[in-house]
Image (tube, rainbow over all chains, first blue to last red; front, top):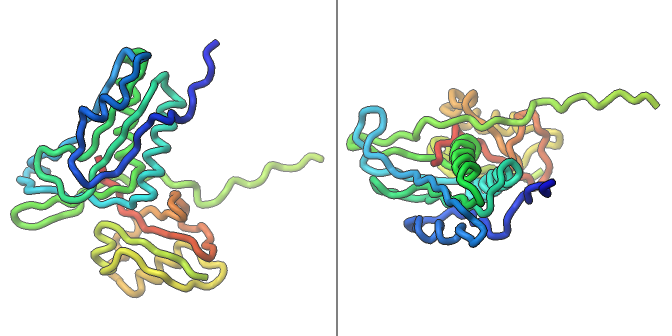
Length: 164
Length: 81
């Protein structure tokens, strides 16, 4: 029987940065001797949005909460998948076309969980991490359409009936 | 009760500030706090259905009661990544 996966790995690296992200450093960070795979996701700034040419983007975040939610994502990855180390780094501020806005690297003994964890991380990040993107065009700027994070129920469930 | 309120994205642009500190009555809920800002800035009203609230950096229902020293934010749909 295998022991339950740890909810965190002290080697996990969860950051918000304002300078360019260095993917190779993150890949090196998660790669350890017991790993057979590193999967990565590189989210980069596209030069168009719904048919309009994008000039650049600006990202802003609720930084303390964003970091907390990114740590929750890492914990979820560890609890569900047989992975080793996680790096999730999101950049804030002004980003030019082609620059990396988010980079995720996951190491694991085997490739399946590494791929799956990477996908889980970016899909969850896009739904739950309070970061916002403003798109700048030649003729103006708009806040990008986003996703509404799931919220707790409005009223707590009733307490269980007492039979004592 | 003193509450710290944070605004992001388009809400920050409407309200004209990133954060505020307000005094609310005992028993006030997050929804009451939003109503107060909506009265000051009617342009906020149409955004209400697409907002999510947070209390002390955790998503919270609009009915959540406030406590002194809480940090509340009104979060537009997130678009990171």
